[in-house]
Length: 111
Image 1 (cartoon, rainbow, N blue to C red):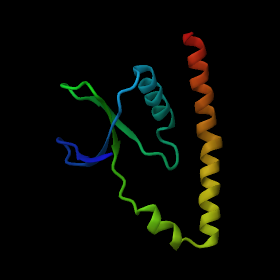
Image 2 (cartoon, rainbow, N blue to C red):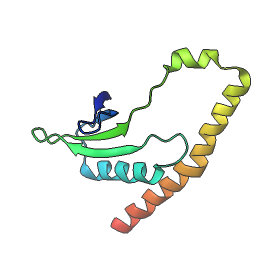
Image 3 (cartoon, one colour):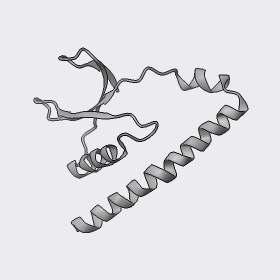
Image 4 (cartoon, one colour):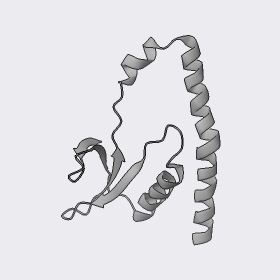
Protein backbone atom coordinates (compact mmCIF):
# COMPACT_ATOMS: atom_id res chain seq x y z
CA UNK A 1 0.00 0.00 0.00
CA UNK A 2 1.26 3.43 -0.95
CA UNK A 3 -0.01 6.89 -0.13
CA UNK A 4 -0.91 8.89 -3.23
CA UNK A 5 -2.66 12.06 -4.31
CA UNK A 6 -5.37 12.77 -6.87
CA UNK A 7 -3.79 15.12 -9.43
CA UNK A 8 -7.03 17.00 -10.16
CA UNK A 9 -8.52 17.42 -6.68
CA UNK A 10 -5.30 17.22 -4.60
CA UNK A 11 -7.07 14.75 -2.31
CA UNK A 12 -5.04 12.03 -0.56
CA UNK A 13 -5.65 8.41 -1.56
CA UNK A 14 -4.11 4.97 -1.05
CA UNK A 15 -2.83 2.83 -3.92
CA UNK A 16 -2.67 -0.96 -3.57
CA UNK A 17 -0.44 -2.47 -6.26
CA UNK A 18 -1.57 -6.02 -6.96
CA UNK A 19 0.74 -8.96 -7.43
CA UNK A 20 0.56 -10.76 -10.76
CA UNK A 21 -2.58 -12.91 -10.57
CA UNK A 22 -5.23 -14.14 -12.94
CA UNK A 23 -7.69 -11.50 -14.15
CA UNK A 24 -10.65 -13.50 -12.90
CA UNK A 25 -9.42 -13.12 -9.30
CA UNK A 26 -8.95 -9.38 -9.78
CA UNK A 27 -12.43 -9.01 -11.28
CA UNK A 28 -13.90 -11.00 -8.38
CA UNK A 29 -12.21 -8.72 -5.84
CA UNK A 30 -13.50 -5.64 -7.70
CA UNK A 31 -17.04 -7.05 -7.62
CA UNK A 32 -16.79 -7.75 -3.89
CA UNK A 33 -15.40 -4.29 -3.13
CA UNK A 34 -18.15 -2.60 -5.17
CA UNK A 35 -20.79 -4.76 -3.48
CA UNK A 36 -19.54 -3.77 -0.01
CA UNK A 37 -19.12 -0.09 -0.92
CA UNK A 38 -21.16 2.23 1.27
CA UNK A 39 -21.38 -0.25 4.14
CA UNK A 40 -20.30 0.63 7.66
CA UNK A 41 -16.54 0.56 8.27
CA UNK A 42 -15.77 -0.17 4.59
CA UNK A 43 -13.14 1.86 2.75
CA UNK A 44 -14.41 2.98 -0.65
CA UNK A 45 -12.77 1.82 -3.86
CA UNK A 46 -12.23 4.97 -5.93
CA UNK A 47 -10.69 3.54 -9.08
CA UNK A 48 -8.89 0.62 -10.70
CA UNK A 49 -5.85 1.59 -12.79
CA UNK A 50 -3.18 -0.22 -14.80
CA UNK A 51 0.45 0.77 -15.18
CA UNK A 52 0.93 1.30 -18.94
CA UNK A 53 4.44 -0.18 -19.01
CA UNK A 54 4.16 -3.24 -16.77
CA UNK A 55 0.36 -3.62 -17.13
CA UNK A 56 0.17 -4.25 -13.38
CA UNK A 57 -3.30 -3.47 -11.99
CA UNK A 58 -3.73 -1.30 -8.88
CA UNK A 59 -6.65 -0.36 -6.67
CA UNK A 60 -7.12 3.24 -5.55
CA UNK A 61 -8.89 3.65 -2.20
CA UNK A 62 -9.92 6.67 -0.17
CA UNK A 63 -7.33 7.78 2.41
CA UNK A 64 -8.16 7.14 6.06
CA UNK A 65 -5.87 8.62 8.70
CA UNK A 66 -5.65 5.95 11.38
CA UNK A 67 -3.62 4.93 14.41
CA UNK A 68 -1.40 1.84 14.38
CA UNK A 69 -3.09 -1.22 15.92
CA UNK A 70 -0.24 -1.82 18.38
CA UNK A 71 -0.79 1.66 19.84
CA UNK A 72 -4.59 1.61 19.66
CA UNK A 73 -5.66 -1.71 21.23
CA UNK A 74 -3.90 -1.36 24.61
CA UNK A 75 -5.75 1.93 25.23
CA UNK A 76 -9.24 0.42 24.82
CA UNK A 77 -11.32 -0.37 27.89
CA UNK A 78 -13.01 -3.78 28.18
CA UNK A 79 -16.43 -2.62 26.91
CA UNK A 80 -14.91 -0.96 23.83
CA UNK A 81 -13.10 -4.19 22.95
CA UNK A 82 -16.37 -6.09 23.25
CA UNK A 83 -18.11 -3.55 21.01
CA UNK A 84 -15.26 -3.73 18.47
CA UNK A 85 -15.46 -7.54 18.28
CA UNK A 86 -19.26 -7.35 18.04
CA UNK A 87 -19.00 -4.92 15.10
CA UNK A 88 -16.50 -7.19 13.32
CA UNK A 89 -18.84 -10.15 13.68
CA UNK A 90 -21.83 -8.06 12.57
CA UNK A 91 -20.02 -6.96 9.41
CA UNK A 92 -19.12 -10.59 8.66
CA UNK A 93 -22.70 -11.73 9.02
CA UNK A 94 -24.43 -8.81 7.28
CA UNK A 95 -22.02 -8.07 4.43
CA UNK A 96 -19.37 -10.71 3.88
CA UNK A 97 -21.50 -13.87 3.99
CA UNK A 98 -24.02 -12.59 1.40
CA UNK A 99 -21.08 -11.37 -0.67
CA UNK A 100 -19.53 -14.84 -0.62
CA UNK A 101 -22.88 -16.32 -1.65
CA UNK A 102 -23.04 -13.77 -4.48
CA UNK A 103 -19.56 -14.76 -5.74
CA UNK A 104 -20.38 -18.47 -5.53
CA UNK A 105 -23.55 -17.85 -7.56
CA UNK A 106 -21.59 -15.95 -10.21
CA UNK A 107 -18.93 -18.65 -10.38
CA UNK A 108 -21.60 -21.34 -10.85
CA UNK A 109 -23.25 -19.34 -13.63
CA UNK A 110 -19.95 -18.84 -15.46
CA UNK A 111 -19.17 -22.59 -15.57
